[in-house]
Image 1 (cartoon, rainbow, N blue to C red):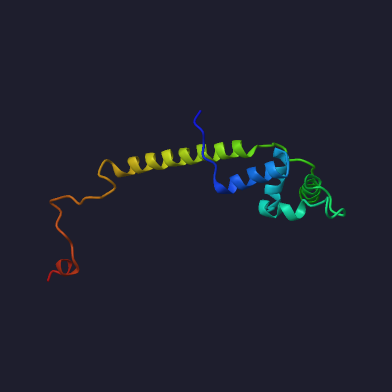
Image 2 (cartoon, one colour):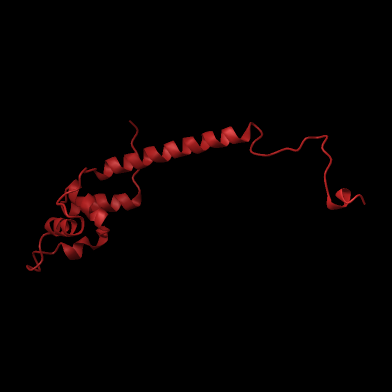
Length: 128
């Protein structure tokens, strides 16, 4: 299997997962909540600010509050998500290519008028 390139947006989530020691489920929950991985540093300083809960617990609390469940039904890692996105992209490109080839009829997408057809203009139609 070929290695897929991971977009910058997903790369930010991978870095946040490593830096803040989050599980795949926590990263997926944070994504679904719309959290910004760049802002995790201000949320994850529970050692300096003891009234804050650790980041994984905070994400779990927000997720349960919004969605009414403690974890996502299906947990997908960032790498698997990137692979699915790349696969869908190649399938879309192949389908688009097939549609273009099917529509063009081999003329390169151009429609060509029949050579014996006379051009019609308003003056010719009026009998002038």
